[in-house]
Image (cartoon, rainbow, N blue to C red; front, side, top):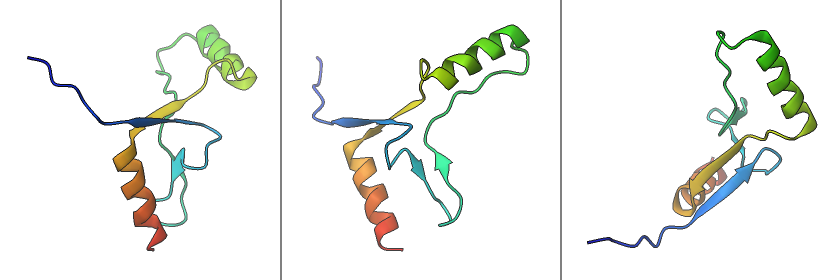
Amino acid sequence: MFKTSTHTYRTLKRNDPNFSFSPDGITLVPRASIAVSNRCPENYRDLIQECVNHGWLLPVAHMRDEELTWELLKYETL
């Protein structure tokens, strides 16, 4: 038996206002990023960096609507 989900989610892009959060009111932390291993060959790292710089490779984050709502409410009360 399959159960259908009624949960919806949001995709946050790097330039969206809620893409980053501040756990202490000072530091901004992105919800998603691209991590490249130190073992990645330099030419691949350079190519990845070029793709990011040109906007061809973009970090995105997915959050359930309920999680984002509670997160926003939490920081409004601080």
